[in-house]
Length: 167
Image (cartoon, rainbow, N blue to C red; front, side, top):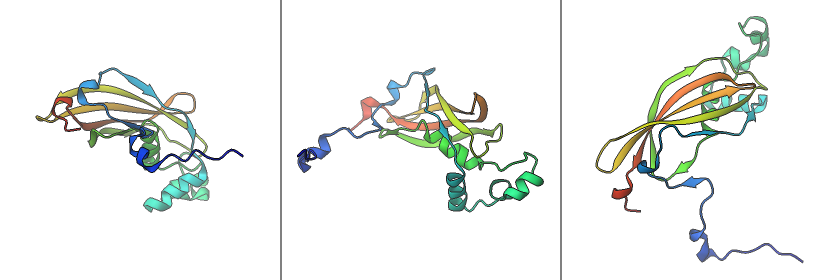
């Protein structure tokens, strides 16, 4: 009978953590792009997000209103959810980077339940910030279905400098 491999506890901390990175400011190359996988937004997850953040606007939560009185003829996915899911598609867990904020957030086109989104992240620029940190800017373009741009923003992060790292 095959038994699961039981990794000894003393080895756990030596195993690389999945989806975690350890790049530094010096490693960032402006112009680098990555593209995410695609994901279709379901009604269930849309409504779960709305309930979590208490967003029950008629455009996102009321089908009769959205279809009969709304300007799009059907329910929207909340922009905050498109932002969260779109950025989450390209998010990594870099232990040396810390969010500093977002600029130029724009909801360019509506996203509807059943639409499929994906994200392209572009490393835009970097500059020194302090003796131990650099500042890094990346753009996020969220597209739906067949490459229609629906969201744009720029993410600023502070990132540790390698030569001043204690890790």
